Amino acid sequence: MREQRGDQAELRGDCARCFGLCCVALPFTASADFAVDKGAGTPCRNLRGDHRCGIHDRLRQEGFTGCTVYDCFGAGQKVSQVTFGGRDWRTGPPERARAMFEVFPVVRQLHELLWYLTEALTLPAARPVHAGLRRALEKTERLTRRTPGELAALDVAAHRQEVGALLLKASELARAGVRGRRRDRRNADLVGARLKGADLRGVSLRGAYLIAADLTGADLRGADLIGADLRGADLTDADLTGGVLPHPAPARRGPGERRYEAAGFTRPTRALERRAADAASPSARRVRGTAGAVRRSGRSRSPRGISVSRSVTRSR
Image (cartoon, rainbow, N blue to C red):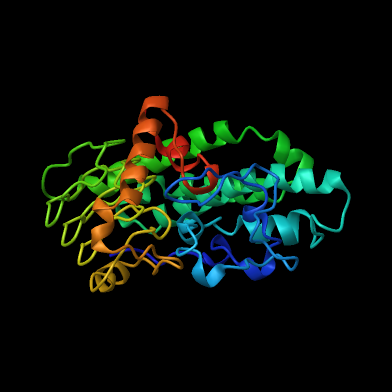
């Protein structure tokens, strides 16, 4: 049974308290996820003057699926309301806007670490490293409250590596007691894989490419899914009990949501509701092409141009 988790309310995006930072600071490329190209620091053409999206109710239809699955882990409101004290990028000097756009991706990475650390602290089997996890959690939270200049100069990669080692140990401890073969499928290419009903108990799928994978009814008890790309994956009736999971995944779920929540995980705020036919669609094929390019370059490309999860969790 999972232990009670700490308050994660501030680790979920709250657009009402943000100045539309993800719609300005981050770049995206015309693809299956986005309809057009946009450079970093350039406002999206759909962003209104009040920092709200003008096509929020039809993003998918307009070709902006990436927006529906992206989550800043609460970094948007932290940067907007804490780091910059409620002063937006529109009304201030250009230097402020540039600083906000530079700091936002840094805080987003730190908030992602806060999410993983909070999740790891709910794993009873990981108690031997709970003290270290708590120290890392407190340190990471302190880092998020630094000044804009300090955040811009932060060696976030070094901090990710330090935290990643702790998370890996927590995962190993949590999966050690899971019956079955504890296979290592870290960073595996499972794009569009047919894994319906598969026995994946205790398997490390850390950083795996599971885009549009069929995981209906799969047994994922005790599996490690940190950093896995689950865009368009079907987790209907999958059993995720005791799993080490990423932020609520952009995956499609049906009746299986009850198993997800019974396991102690929260329902995703923006679930990617793909139809089963998407796996064979031209859009899905473009996504697969992106995954292939990622593998060739050795880099992770998540929606809106951020490379975070695999840089946190990739094993050497």
